Image 1 (cartoon, rainbow, N blue to C red):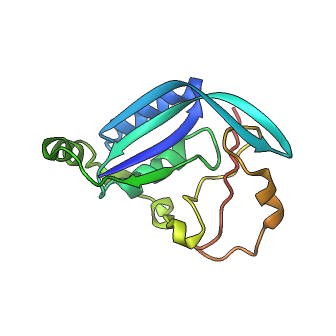
Image 2 (cartoon, rainbow, N blue to C red):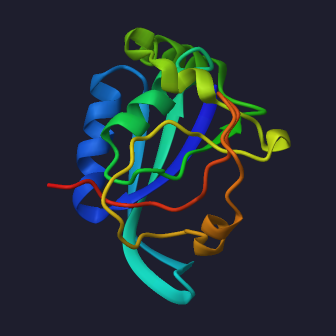
Image 3 (cartoon, helix red, strand yellow):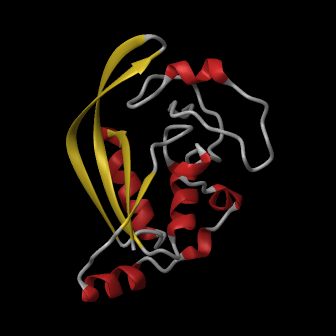
Length: 163
């Protein structure tokens, strides 16, 4: 079982939760409203009101979950932090595995999961309009390295979709 953390604009959080559970890539999503994110963006310290998504998924659906978040999230590089669960109620684990069994939405994005040892994060979201959001590192943009196939580094920068 995995617990995945992500932040989203308040107006998008509920939609994300509904879609992730509806696509069966998540068993449950808690939407924690009232999260104040403080981050550095283009050299300035910024603040945004967001919601924290606490997503429970099965080990087998993690790749599909990452792909779904990248596909529907309003940020081009959404925060996706997957945590291994050390202990869990056995009946709850069975329910999560059953409820998050819909890996039918696998895509190339799910193949790009890298570990912290690889100095990367979840990748694959398409570029979107540049805007501020939480937990970004504007300084990483200056450290671009040549892209390597399926091993390029991503930044923690998030941007919103064009409407």
